[in-house]
Length: 314
Image (cartoon, rainbow, N blue to C red; front, side, top):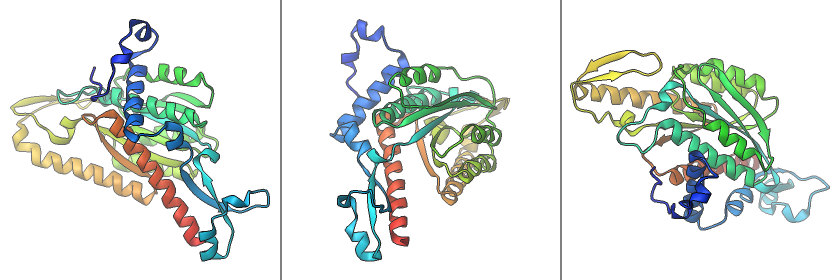
């Protein structure tokens, strides 16, 4: 197993390994790398970051009033911090057949990479007293676990994440419709997958979630071979998600293929931007702790931007 350069020796004690699964081990290694890279505790970095402003009420401590905003607007606003604004986080993971792909350039499949990141994110969220739920999907919503902040919840969540990919296609529009009906109140929804579907269907599904005022983050996972088509041929490509097989000369189709990849990502990025959805591309050859940092940076940037809009329009 690749550990992205992290120190995994302390986990090699047989007594420790006997108690944890492969996914749990990967998640712990990601967290080690992330926390050592930030040089600060996970609680401090995630739970007390400035989040937003809200209107002052008589029960608020005046020490939290933002006097700079008062000077610009002549209105009283207090600062809210992550620690004061606990979230319900719904982690939505693609388990369709294409997520099982792993080229010789990657240490793990897209599904293994995605579930490792999700396991780490869920652990961090639970540590900051957020509630975390999980949904797995392909053509349908295959599993739905309601958010919980229980100390035992992470083990149950990791157990569900260890489910294998199936042979079904992705059906984003249908799945997100099913998801909307399950989520009765506003949540932070983190969708992790390769998004191999018609981009218009993906965006229709995201639009439904945004209509219900959910905050959305899309983590689009790609194998490095899918991003570069590094093969030499002639070669026979075996399609996933019932796409059949095709024989081709990679050198002859590479330029057009890369154009299609760029178009696909650009359409998703543009549509997500219009919906105020964070869209981040992940390469499974990248270290997992760096990928986690990218996700957290995107979330922090989004929350700060939202806060600046509130303060600026007040």
